[in-house]
Image 1 (cartoon, rainbow, N blue to C red):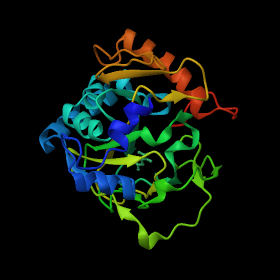
Image 2 (image 1 turned 90 degrees about the horizontal axis):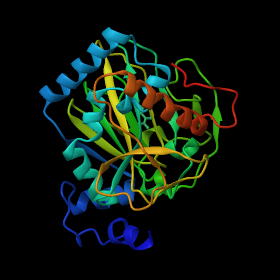
Image 3 (image 1 turned 90 degrees about the vertical axis):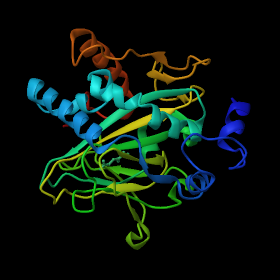
Image 4 (image 1 turned 180 degrees about the vertical axis):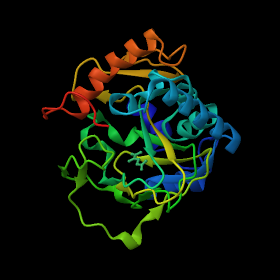
Length: 294
Ligand SMILES: O=C(O)CCC(=O)C(=O)O
C-alpha cells in the first residue's frame, strides 16, 4: 500500500501524466482540500439524468430514507454517474487507477425548501482508513448556486484532525444524524461551490463544508459520489462492500457489489437493501436508529 500511495498521492505534482487535473489543480487539492469546477458532461446530458431520476420518483415515490444512499445500486442513472469516464479520470488523477465507489448520497433540495446541511467533516462516521485517500465527486444535475443552496467549503480545513461533532437530528438537516462540527467557522473565509449542471466539485473527506436552504424556484439536485482506492479499509464493521468502477482490486477489503440491470428491479432492490444494512451499521453505529432518515 505504501508504494501505491507514494506513487500517486505524494508524487511531485508535475511528475506524472494526469488525465484531467493540471499541476496547479493538484497543488490546490493538496493545499486547500478541493477542486472545482470540472465539466464532466454536457448540460443536456445532466438534464437527461435528472429526467431519468424524476421518472424513477414518478414510478416509486420520492427517493428518501435508505434509498438516498448507495442510490447507484438501485438506479441505472446513478450507476452511469459513478462509472462516468471523465469523473473517474479526475478521481484517478488524485488516488490512482484502481477505484471503488464506496457510496453515493443523493442531495435533493426542493424549490423553496428549508433543507440544509450543517458544517461537518464527512470522515466523522464513515470508519474509512486511511481517510486522506477518500475523494468525493459532487455531481450537479441542476444549477447549484448560492440561491439554490450550493455547498460552501472552508479552504485548508482538511489539514485539521477529526473534529468532535454533535448529533442534532434536526428535521431539516439532510445529514444522517444532523451532525454539527463543534468548531468556530469564519464565514468570510469560505468558498461557494457554485456548479452548472454537468459540472462536479471534488472534496477531501476532512473538508469542513455546509450548505444552506434552497431559495430558488427550481430543485437543486446533486449526487455525492464517494470514491476510494482498494487499499482503504473499513474499521467500524466487518464485511463492508463497494463497487469496483475502474482498474483492479488486489486487496479484497470490500465485498464486490453489483450494478443494477434495470431501475429498482428485484435484484437491484435486494443488492441495495443488503448493502444498506452495512451502511446503516456504519453511519448509525452507537445510536438506536435502524434506518437512514428522509
Ligand atoms: O449537497 C449538499 O448540500 C451537501 C453535500 C455534502 O455534505 C457532501 O457531499 O458531503
